[in-house]
Length: 246
Image (cartoon, rainbow, N blue to C red):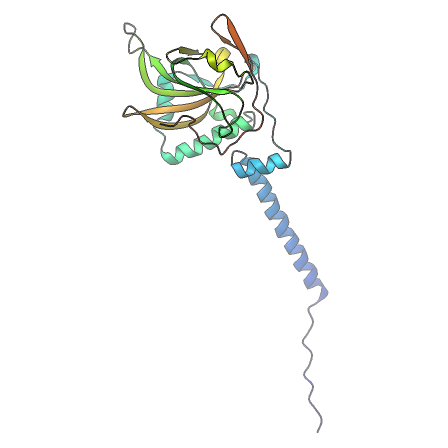
């Protein structure tokens, strides 16, 4: 009795595998492009920063001078409070990401660039260490002093700053002491806001701004002393801010 042989299954045409390979390659290219775009656009994310550092693709911080700093808005303590204190938690997080990104990319898009002005009374001073945003340097915490009216003396206002000085001069920190008044003006200070937070001081809610001067060179302390500030090298975007804890 003759056997009945099953017909062989039809083979896929050659062009099927060619189309499949090209589709996979296209998907891989799109995913790679999207990931690269995400890394370069969000340099402030610690993981992305480390990837770019290992690839040697980090933008080098530019040494601006007083005459060529990016254009920004200069605000006093009252205006700073009005601009930042009312931000909701989600808006605050988004704002901080953009502020740090602007700093890391040399303010390519300086839409949020804000310089502080005013008089600030020094509260604390300390040297920077390896847990901070960068080293070497030091940070000065100071509270704004504002006159309630033209006939009154200046009084503490609910705005504090962490003024971060990138410098290799280890002796410069001794030039700032608790109680000193730090006068800040857009020119020549050019102290740019890089982080915004809210803290509690003696039961009062206070706006805390982390600022970094971006006009580098000699920084004058009084009439007899000066030290050099330089663009920081490697930064640590994942560092805790503010730098002083309650």
